[in-house]
Length: 105
Image (cartoon, rainbow, N blue to C red; front, top):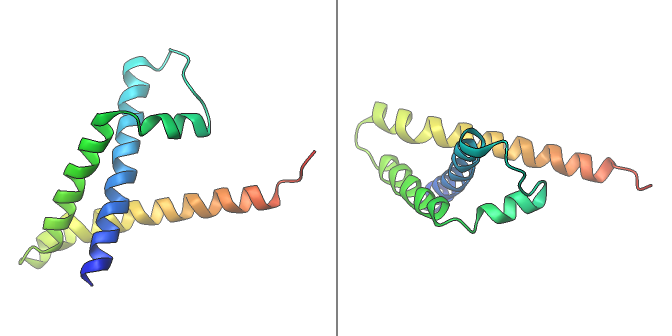
């Protein structure tokens, strides 16, 4: 169960860090032309703030997964990580279906 909690914490922290970075970027300088598509995703990993945010969120989620109080564990670990990972899986499945069903030319 520890490996599962680590995986959930890692995926949720990475996805949330990327989305928070994109949200701040869109509000701060959204009118500036930047990379689009896969270039925007790849360029996100070049920012150290994304990595620091991801490691910090991972630590929060991981330590919340070991909380002794059930209510804290549910609201600080299971609820946020399940929602974030669920949205990520649905989005990845949607992109996969769209790519597989896209007709070339």
